Image 1: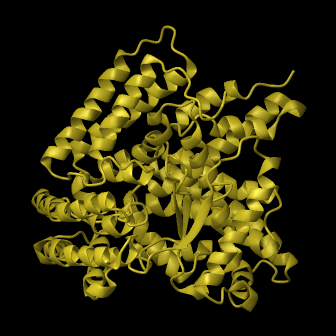
Image 2 (image 1 turned 45 degrees about the horizontal axis):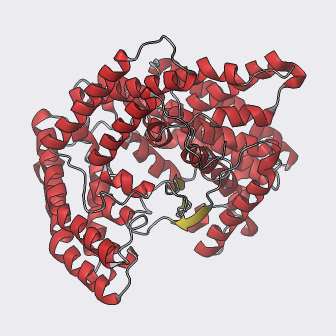
Image 3 (image 1 turned 180 degrees about the vertical axis):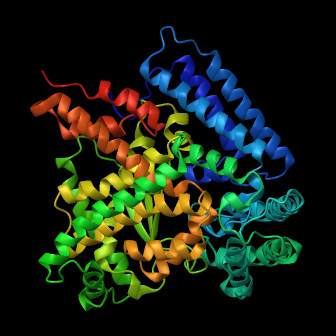
Length: 562
């Protein structure tokens, strides 16, 4: 079948796509990111009305999944039903627990980051686009007022953010509001046809956006800040252990024992350290892996000379990975992958790198963001594995292939990541090891950097459970990550990210372990007929999946050659 042809749609497909339409209406920014401009004049509604609409959608999804009979149900329809049910069930649980009043304070992706991020995906370069963009800016005061109400509700419920998350969010808002209007982030970033249009946007930002952000900042600084939690983990919130269990379920789709996850992370750290010692010995540093790492950090050739040099190195690694990919993949994505630096307004709070998918029509490529803040800490030996994780053959391959797979309904192509977080991040981490198999690391230093990255994700199992279930302090997390190989800058930023996003840090290793386990079992089953390209094509050929669904279905997709 031609990749552009739409296959016949089943009743389940049509039902799923109806749900996806409702998801886009409730999440207009998601539609914009996909390249769907129908809702470009709207912002989401974080208030009671939007919450009620979201709960109604979730309840309808559960009821629809329960009503789909098993008889005659094909594989893809069965998976679609699984994903619909999982997303609906988790949404209801989160609404019951009012996790939204915690998530409103977020230095990583809180409401204050929405408009600057939108400028990467929404242009104002025609009269129609300008009108929609300005309408969105004018909707911002009501959007932020609803978020202020969430702060007040959280205060009333005693469900407030950890103090470090509030402090980072406040500092970020202060930096944004201190920016002179002629250098304001939104007018500076958005693509316009004429400077007069940019001036119009600047005026709307002055009159609408800055006052709305200032009101949100004032609400954060007031009694809310006095009530923020000293304890960084969810354990310190009302009903915190239950809240954490829900977030673990949301991100991994598995019910996991935090203590067991914690122990497994410690054990894996030991295994990875033994691999690092081998490289350290060959480099003449004996078992002192910290000394070898310090030598890499002080090696002039390993430190980018400029922001531009760091970006150029990432682009070169993507090109090398794309050239090697046919050895391990039968299907390759059509969409390209661009590299841009993290915006300065949030680089102090952002991780080393992250990825945004291409538009649905692939006219906008995938976007790999690289953080150039604290440039001396962004060594090339660490950049390589990060690029293979975030871009090629990691997230860009997985997500672009998913988006381009017209054999799947739109719900599966664009909404299933809500149930497949561990699958997505597991693939990214698996891709770092796969890059080693493909010979992409230039030298032992880059291989050591890859092992540091693997240790970092094993460390996430330890610190996420430590912070949110075992009552670790922030400093305990920072110290653990430093011992795992992170720089001081990244150990601090990452710790505060885990505090802000409970459970998300577990997805990487949990997902990678499941992919590795399935590959090993299928390889042992098929023996010499095992085809790595077929394994990867089938693994990536059905979109994002709950891990339980992946384990059930993948062995059947990868059939032994006769």
